[in-house]
Image 1 (cartoon, rainbow, N blue to C red):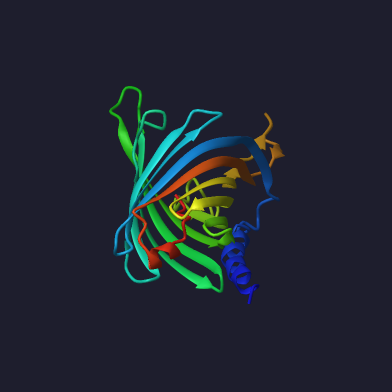
Image 2 (cartoon, rainbow, N blue to C red; image 1 turned 90 degrees about the vertical axis):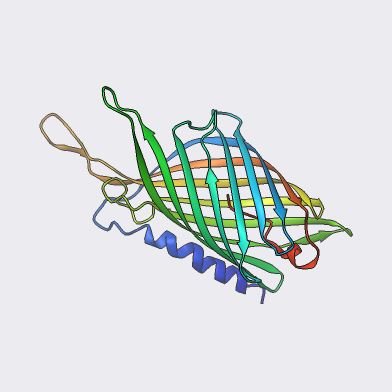
Length: 263
């Protein structure tokens, strides 16, 4: 029984990875790593009796410029199914020219003591493009995402809980002129959270965000190929501390929440 949740999670995680190899005529992948980014993150969720909840996140990058916030709502449809909407607004310190809206549907379930999350999402992102000598315009981009997560609670004493969480997300940007890879971005994350009480936790997370691109070929003055067109993977390590608050936590059923919203 204990291997079943790992098997189910592996199917969801490994399938997108194999899809990345959908460029058979290009040379082997070149990978580049950027410097790690460190974050301080705070999350809050406010529950209703129905099981639906509001949530918010603020996140500050510690070793580079970058402040972001997320506001959202998750509507409980059935015991296991949710539908949600979220917005990333334009904020000082983030990007004054960019905002995005997301819609998602998610399913939570259990296999033994393991909790599983499956989620599909659609995101509309707007960027303000400033043009010299011409009016500014807004460009809109679409993204589709699939996410899988697995978690388990380990009791420590009578009230404390230690909760490891592993998740994987794959995103597709349907812009074939710029992003011809099958999958354009992934994020693999592991988090360990400690709940001294059931309504708040302190945790640390480690993640790797990878962007998948096609690098253009390089030629010398005579037109000879120096480096052919190739697949390029850009890896960024993400390390952060998180404070997580569960407000107005309802008794019984809502204690079965994943406590791992992937925003």
